[in-house]
Length: 77
View 1 (cartoon, rainbow, N blue to C red):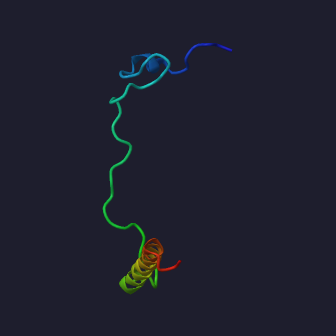
View 2 (cartoon, rainbow, N blue to C red):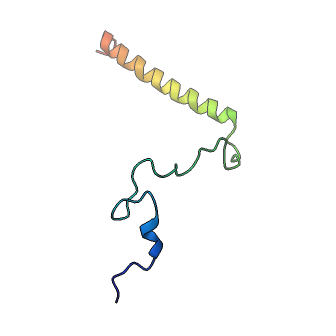
View 3 (tube, one colour):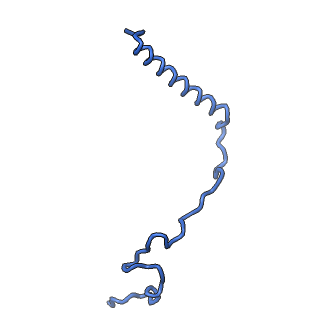
């Protein structure tokens, strides 16, 4: 077997460091950003369902805070 490089053009490519690495800033960004959704909305994922879950989580956090405020004040002693 021969130990030579099968691609004779590798030595002429600009921007390569010894060993084949590329210095920072030499390559463009991998991909751009895409605005908007890529998939159609699933059935039942409407605005009302979002408001319900935000309200349920908010009510849970409020009850949690009220319990610990009552504990600090001495209401549950």
